Image (cartoon, rainbow over all chains, first blue to last red; front, side, top):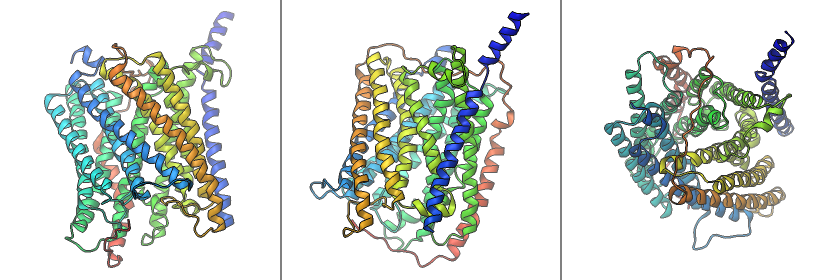
Length: 46
Length: 550
């Protein structure tokens, strides 16, 4: 029973896409931050 | 179809593909050298000898790398991809490809000759009212028409495969080639119309004036899709080849196909985002195309998710723990993975820059500044180029019956890091200088020692430093290319094709129903372009005579 649980946990770990989720969030944040940086230049100049 | 044709590209097809590669890498050598000369001139420390003009060098650089290298490499790679995944070409299909190749080559020679004779210094985008010699425009027409022959041959192979395998889902790589070829065909209709109906008769003297806004609108109808014509073959390698190289599986066949369909739909009706400061197009239609442009973010993020998922699943399979432990488990010593990976990483700032460029009024901050040059040196000259190099490192030995040796593998990785380093300096300096107002497409000038122009000079020197490092990268890649063509040891180099996970869901049939997607594509193009083009024609001024300012 205990070993079954361990196997299940191992399989879950192997199929986890947590890192992918955080990486794609990271890209999204970078895109938004860059956009607002240039937007602030835009509002200053125009 | 026997099994050997599935694993190896047929020798006759290999010869066809290699013919494309020789032209592509010759163009890379010439275009790269011109790039080096450009950054030297813009540093203000160097002048071109023998009355060679800066804008002539710029035209050679843009045409050789943006049109010749990319088109020949892509069509060669696509031929290999179709031959490998759908079986060898029939004699008729191969002959059609060869005819297309020779027409493209003739067109390249015609255009290149006129540029070298200084009869076609009209910059890479050949904007009217700058007027080139008619042979330059005819040569460009030949390049486009030749490419049609080549893609028709690829699509004929696909049609044959579907006929022979009724009801089955086509090989993913061939499917992607078809999506990219369809997009290319529909997009090139715009530039063909521009050249055949306007620029060619105008340069021949049959008509005196052209409507500049129409020429630019037709150019960008093609021009933005051209960017995706470069990018989609890189995506083919990311989705299909990379999973096999790292020993993993394709994350999702359906997701890959859907993202290609979205690129097909949203790459063309968006060209006006390159003309956001152009008079004669109303704000409403600019806004419509800005919204359509932003739709491309969806398949881009789908691709990012899919790639990270492939990497994470493989990395965890190899024992990677924690949130990012899997990252270290990837095969960083393998150039076939590392080189395109650096290209993928570059696409993050490149994509962010693209969204800024397309953001309607915000485009005024960067329009016609060297920021834009910095942007496309990240997209095409890093993301696409490094992925193409990564492809070449297994494709060329596969075709020539040789192998990538450990020494060449090492040099390939050094090449990619050299490129990334040089590009960070050059493109970074271009982005910053662009934000300070430095113009693109302009030779060195202090503009009468204006204070603002003096601010740009340190960045121009940084561009020269970065450009020199990049040229070193070109030398490395040419050494590898020559080695893989003629000197590497004989052997069998794999053409890696990833497999879909055995538990994956069946791919929906609608994704292969081209009638539906072509109808949607035509509808989107009509919505985005019909009224703006009618407005330009109805409200158009007299038109412009040709100018030769060089």
